[in-house]
Structures are given as C-alpha cells and as structure tokens.
Length: 190
Image 1 (tube, rainbow, N blue to C red):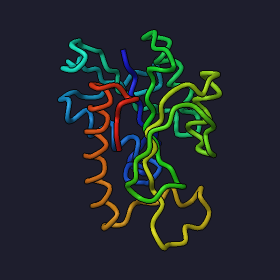
Image 2 (image 1 turned 90 degrees about the vertical axis):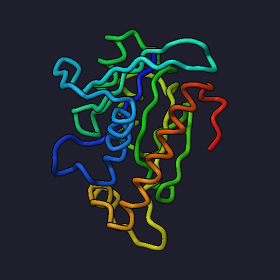
Image 3 (image 1 turned 120 degrees about the horizontal axis):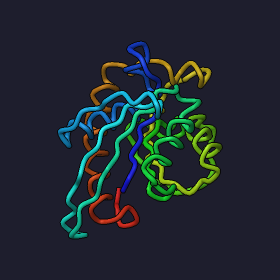
C-alpha cells in the first residue's frame, strides 16, 4: 500500500496559489487514474483510492491519494491519521509539495532529511516522528524575479506564463510518479 499526498491549503481562495502545487498534482493524478476525491472528516482529508497494476513488479498495489484539509502548516495531523488508519509505514508515504529553493517546474525526489523550512513537511516530520518518507519537491521559484517575503509569495497565484509551464510539468510529474510506482522510486530518473 502506498500513500501519495499533495500538500496545500483548502478552499477556492488558495486553489491556484504556488503553495497548492501538491493539491494540483494529486488532482491531476486522480484524474489520470479515473478516481474522485471524497471528504473524510475523521482523517481531516480528501481521499481517493486506486488499485494499480505494476507490469514490472507483476503485482497490484492499492494507492491512497490524499489532500489534507488541515491547512499547510498542520499537514502532519492528517497524514498521521491516514497512515495509521491504513497501516502505511513512513517509507511508503510520498509527499508532493512546493519548494521555493528550486526553479519553477524543476522536480526533485528526496528521501529523509530536514524540511528545509517547508512548514507542511515539518508538520509531517513532527507528527510522524521521523524524516523517513519520500518527497517530490516541485520548484516554484521564478527566474530573475524578486519574491519578497516567502510567506506572502507562496500564497500568490502563478502568472499566466507560469501556469502554462506548471501544467506541462505536472504532467511530467504524473509520469515520474507512475514510473516510480512501477519500477521502484529508487530506480526513477528525472
């Protein structure tokens, strides 16, 4: 079993902000899988489930997609509830989140380590009491632009040109995630 969670903030006000790239990515993944999210108040999240057949592994795996509804800085509450309910160990948790230190559209995969100031990731570390989970870090830093205070910048919408780049890169991320599921995340190339 695998938990793939996108981080973001609930509500229309935040739907197209840089901080919600995780929500955008799992929405696209759910659409690709043909599943819909349902509110799960007990877990403080929107949940969708999918059974995926992995040709290289010759097995089926249940994938739980999640969008915590606790707001970014408290993401760990929902991730902990979901992982406990389904019995998912931290090494089978994949988190998709924005990264202000990486150029727009660049995707990096990381296992363990610090949160690097990403408060949603820090909340997950604090609640799970481990750093041993995977992160799909999606760059949101614009090139050659001053961003001002980080807290305000991440809550701004993408510009029109950035939205075009983001859509393309989310499609690439979906393929990377599916490859990671099939071949093993450690064998994934970016």
